[in-house]
Structure formats: structure tokens, C-alpha cells
Image (cartoon, rainbow, N blue to C red; front, top):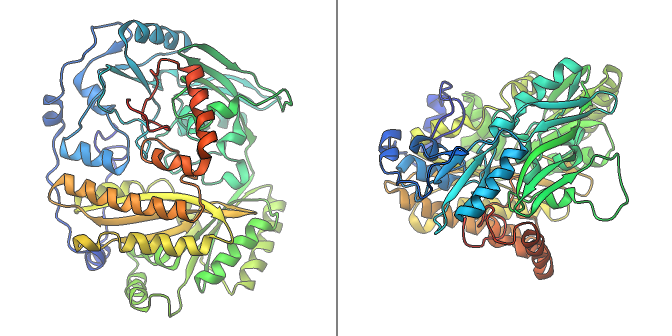
Length: 533
């Protein structure tokens, strides 16, 4: 069963090697394991629903608690402390588009706001219920899951929006097909959620971002239905799929999604290399992105992330290197881990692998046998570390951005420095490290993880997060980078969206929202930062 206050399946437990835990204590201080609220305690505090019973939804208190939050750090703090602030008044599980249309009728009659919910994996407050004068119905789309149709000649697969990553791959595999979209939340997140947040999979370089895979579908809105027909391409005016992509539930509820599937490759390989320093690793990342090679993934870790990764795996040598790195602060040898994904026909993979080897040798890199295979095996396990670290007294959060190659080095330095020094006024230390997760010919994403101690008071922990998040977001904006490369906007990034879109751009987005939702019933607070939800 899904954890109600943490990541993933509650039968899966992750432990931190004792030496790694000792190192964390050295880096940020000894953690104090928190006293978490129990589910019974949280449920006991749930207020009565403001809605009268209806066959379309349930007001079960446990169900409402389980749908009250996503997976941002503020969400975790609220769930673990029992200070939820707000819960939905009801949970709806419509099985199809007709039932969703009925929900809009009920919402119009009762004045309720609707908040779409896929896998509940938002890390930016996208599914978080906020206090409102209106009753709130969270719309769980899990009942729509499944493959509805498959055009094997065209490789077009139509799914319910609530279909999870593993379900998608299980439905396509017997047909020799794959979607190839593998975000780190793959095991839990849903296809509809990927579309409305402009999700990026780990192997997007080979398979494409979700906007490359999303061909059409059906959106139910407060104004009626919007059908998005499937074409190989079209020059017939603006593409309305672009309005749905990144809309984060503000326009309506996406019920059906048609995607472009791909023939499953005969061979897939993840090769790992160790490059002597960050300067060479950064140059290698750019050369790989601009070489035109058929790669499915390139991931490049900074020296600090490389050492941290090995240390968390219990590698004694890595722990020693990390200790020395923290003393060197950039003046000594600083190895960087590079992982390259190759997916395709054996002949193509072989030729591409040789070309990659040549580029790596030019950067004085060496192969890291077995590391790539281990990474693939554990690729979706990293979020479980959040559970273990929380239990040890530590908070972990991530943020991500993207910019061009020219600005990337300065941004990486500034972002790491800002986070590591962000709590000095509170006499607290922060451990922050980054990697490049997606390279493009013109630039790259930058994905940063940061760790700090939980305070005895949950409100103080939340304040620490707010300070770090605000400082990091300002650095991102000041360096001309995007406020989100893959996590979406949600509530947390909404204050910084205007810096990227401009005043006229924000007016255009607001106008689109008003067109589909003139009475403001959908996911208020998300994307635009308005009152709500």
C-alpha cells in the first residue's frame, strides 16, 4: 500500500549505511529523529465535509487525508507533523469522461472547486489542498487507468489519464512497443500528470519529452469538452495541445491521452565513466549534447554529488574522498561520474558506444565498470532515501532549472554556494550537490539536491525550507534560467513565473485560463499563484 506520509510502497524500507550516516552528521550535524503524528491522530482532526453526500464522491476522512498533499517538502512537514491546514471535502474517482462532466455539474450546483489528482507526486504544491471558502473536491483519476485503444500501424496508444508508468509499459510490452518516458517518479506518477506538468523522462534525449509524445486526447472543462485530434503534424493554426501541456489542472480535467509509442529496442546499455574534474566533465557533457549521437541519456554529476552518491552506497573510499573534497573545496583532483544511455539496434549501439568512448578518452575519462548497470537497477529507488533520512532527522529537497552552456557554470557555482550558506544565520549547515540530467545542443538542465537538519519545531523546519527555496529561486531568476525544467510550477514556483513569461505573457496565460474556467473552479493557486485552491 502507498505510504500516507512518505514516498512509495510502505512495504519497501531503505536504510542508510552507518558510515554514510556518520558522514552526514559530520556535514550538517547530528539529526534528531522526529516524533511523527500517526494516521489515527491526523484523521481524528479532520473536520466534517462541507458537502452533502453524493454518489459521485466520498467524504471518508482517511481518504481525504491521503489526498490532502503531494510530495513537496512542505507537504511532508504537514503530513508528518499532523498540521495539514486543509483537507479536501470529498474525493471523486470518475471512471470516464462522462462521469467527469457530471462532476462539473455538481461543482456548479454546490460552488465546489475541483483539484485534479493523478499519482499525487507533485513536489511543487500542485495537488496540495489550500484553505478556501469553497468546498474542495479532489478528483482522483486512477479509475480511468488502462489502454483504451492501440493503432499498431500508426503506433498510437490511447490511455486513460490516470494510467501509471508501470501500467503503460505493461500494456505496450506485449505489442513490442514502449513509451520510453521514465521520470524518477515513474512507478507512481501518471500519464495525465506528465502531460499537464510537461514532464521529462530520464531518457528524454532518446524518446523525447512528454510534449514530443503527447499526440492528442480529451479535456473536460467547466465550459465543456475539448477534443484534441491526432495528426502526424498540422499547420492549421495554433496547436491547442500546447495550451494543455503545462496547464497543471487550471483548464479542466484531462481524461484521455493518446501518445506516440516506439518499437522496443533490441539493446539498451548504460555506460559509466569517471572524468578527472568538473571542467572536463562539463565540456564532455556539451560535446555529447552537440555531437548528434543517438543517445538516450547523458547524466553528469558534479564532484560533490559523485562523492555523495558513492558515500550513500556505503563506499568507504568515497567517504574518504568526500571528506578530503570538503577540505580541498576545488583545489584537488575531483572526479565526476558520467552515465550515458544507449538504446537501439545492436549495430547502432555499438558504433555509438565507440564514438562516446573516443570523446571520453579526450576528456581523460575512464570506464566505471558495473556502475551504469547498478544505476539502472536503482534508478527509481532514490526517493525512498527521503523516508530513511527523515527518520534519522534530516530533510531532503530538490530543485531544478535549465540554462544555456555559457551561463551554466556560473549558475551551478552560485546555486550551490547559496544553498550551502543559506542557513548560516540560524547556525545550521546545508549539504547541496548537483548533476546535469538533460543536455541539449544549446544548454543543459541542472538538478540540485540539498539536505539539512529537521528542527524540533515543524514550523521552524518549514521556515528553513522557505529561506532556502526563496534564495535558490532568486539565484535562478537572476541568472536568466528557467524556474522549472521538469517539476512544473505548482504553487511553489508561481511567484517566479512572471520573470520568465513577462507581463504580456502572463496576461495571455490568464486569458486562456478564464476562457476554459471563467468562474475559477479549477486548481486555484496553482500556476498563477491566485487565491484558492
